[in-house]
Image 1 (cartoon, chains in turn orange, green):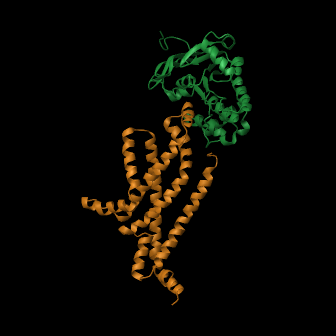
Image 2: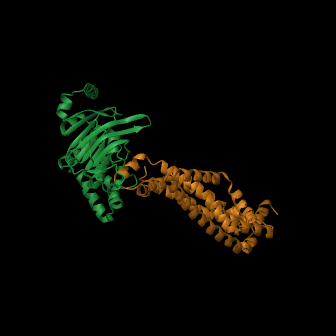
Image 3: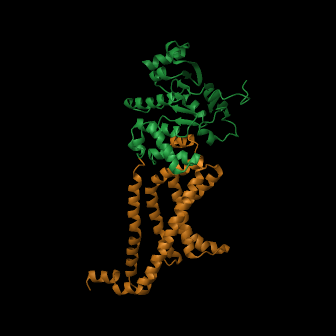
Length: 227
Length: 253
């Protein structure tokens, strides 16, 4: 057996691939569903938090900033393990997929809040003054003048962060979520062959390349007129 | 002493008395009176830091005055019962840096408050916006974004934005100071048209020549006080106060 043959047999075995394809494809669906849920929840909650912060309630903001900083500092795996293995000790049992969704959403929301907030604060005071001088309320000014501009600024850093955090759905394998990596690891264990991991890698690329491409076209599109 | 709204007709459109503004221990406005009659064009002149901008911003409460009273068309602007957002629609404001919304077209800039603050349907708001863009000579630029317009065009859009709300008065804060010299004329032309159509205007400006030929009245502010006021002829040709003389000498140089 040549080195090349050994490599192919280890990483690209068609029999193993065929055998475990349904199981890993199921994992793809799980990853996709949880990833999508994380993106929607994380970006949505992050925006709500940034808007809440814009109102400038001192106590609320102090608490908000503490929580956001903590979520940004903690490794996502630590959050996932604490919720999954820690909370049952106080009688709270949450299914693993739900833990994964909650944890990653919280982390993405924290990072997204910071990105949105940076966008909001970078809008010049003159924009607020102009809008308020025409009789628009604080909320209307935020909604129709400040946020549209802030969101444009936020898109490039936000897409990068979103991709980085959504990839962390792979951490679900540590608590038995049947996502791509979890399914592949078990397939690898059963078959004694690395082909399922290769399949996982390919699926991750297929799943995230469109996101990467989409983020680039978003950047191009929202670059215009924002200058 | 003033008794606000006590059976007095709206003889003044803007009636600001004893306006004070304090930042920390720095008193930017030390009790300024500014009375403006309908159709009048009043110029505020004075060195930078004299309080002109702060005074204008107090007149629509973009800055909260620390003291004094301000009536707009007889309505007490500072009363907690006054809906400030409704009142601001009657007080147009034009800024030195234009402050157009960069994500909206010229039309969108003018139409936004009509739609969201006044509540007009989109089609009507855009019709009114277009009328006002025409008024400042920019109907053909309705679909352009601010970044695609010259400074002079941007400032005219900003004037149309204020004008579209049919304000009782327009406050302009150094409307030509950020413009290249060759673009100043087009904006002053619009200001002159507004004056002729009967709009009431208060303009903080360094355009002494324009003030001299077009203003009804000129106020000279220095260190948060009105030092001298009068018709442009007497204030420019025969200033009574030494500080006014010194300032006019400095800007002429």
